[in-house]
Image (cartoon, rainbow, N blue to C red; front, top):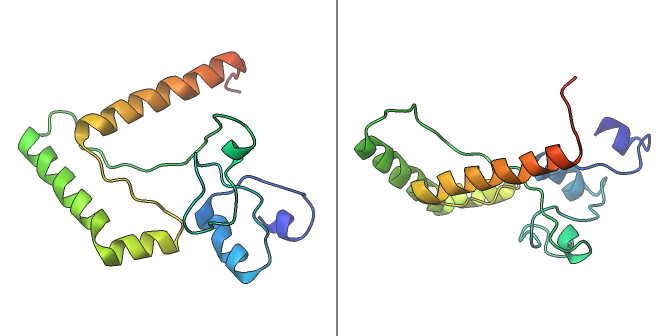
Length: 132
């Protein structure tokens, strides 16, 4: 980010959290967001998918529990976390730091993780990416 702001590099991919303060200050000009659609926090900034069909690369965070955690505890955690994400004060704070909360069910989150794993595994295989 330091090199981008200093003009040492012309462009970079950066999380909203890391770039939003500079965008708000007017020292950084966003070119696009990498989510599937435009982000409400920067509605005038296009999504890459508007130029490259099907493009999406988003960071995400989730909360897990150890294998074997009783189902009633997992269900309660899921309900409470979803309620917290939906609370107006929390939603406003998350939007302020460039996060879009996505309350979900346990089954949907497990499917999402499986889909993301397959999606990025395919990218790694097709690009022949190897650990160094």
